[in-house]
Image (cartoon, rainbow over the protein chains, first blue to last red):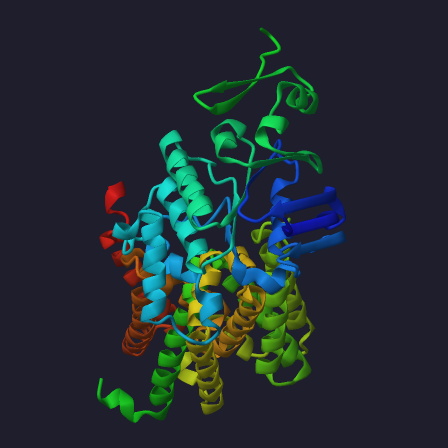
Length: 256
Length: 270
């Protein structure tokens, strides 16, 4: 199968500081890919390169065979952080409509069809009843779902999420991961997300990429998330076990 | 009130007040929502340095103030977008640097020019038709910008980086706005002055922000506060013989405190 997202020899960073080095990566159709690694390992930089918001120092990035900026309307992006002003004067539906602006084009105003598309996207994330609610009034989990709806409104083929579980409680994380799973299996949307929390996400993934500035290992979760591989990567004893079909990773306490 | 309208200077002052109130409160929406309130103060002081240089050289103050304002606005914007330094650092540096320049230029004048005080504190009662034409052109440009890029501007206010990733030319819109902000400050200096133009940009929008969760209503309220307080302030200035810039800003501040008091957003905190 061809690569939908293809990175070859990519080195990127900020000013002269290298954040990711010599990355070779192939993400295929219908995949659900989790990029994992410790803080500061370059996960977000990798996403910025894939979305085209950061130009690499070296190497090539292709999305659907083109440079990412040429296919921006096929990529939906959900950032880790977004406007946290509790009184920002935008409603949930207005935030979702932002995702349609590049499709509407400059100068033109959103019409009835655009509003309907935004409502459908809100319905997909289960928040249609909150469409008129000020964005700042929503809970953390609801805001994240509105941001996913914003990314979905443009009908993307790839959905890229930066730390979608960050700052959320267990129930909210479950709702978001179930939603992503549904989008992946029912709408064939390619999901790429980064996280440093393996346990919450492992059972949803079909591909795991472990990075620490470089890609150390990539493949099926059962291969990558093994006791041997992770112990070597973390440099500490790591236990991996399965419970009710879910993979659990436990870094053993050095004082135990 | 009716007799006031017979005086030519008052007619000009009313027109100038409306134009300043409208334009400053419009650009103020973006300034307040993007959390760059002190940028107005920084640019105003840069603009003043331009004015004093022009007066020193015996040239037209407007063009010099415009150049200084726009260059400093773009410089601060560039530092903000580049990341690294927090925005208050370049604003603080440019604030002091341009004020030092202004003081130096005033010191170099062979004879003190009384217009320095006019630009510092504003004098809406002595605006000329040329000032009004500049204000009108500025308002036209600001309105055009808001009409053409209304939806893009909202997205940039919400999240500039996300807007850029989504395909909106957020950088160009941001810099275009900064140029308009510089233009607004330069054209408003003769009416409200360096010290108070910052207040006219921030306070009407801040008062409107307290009262609504809707962007379009915030826009309407901000413009209303800006224009109404300009007119009431002007009337009070004439009636009680007090400086016009100060009375306009006192009135708009009064609106702000009332908004704060009745704000539905603060009700949960009380």
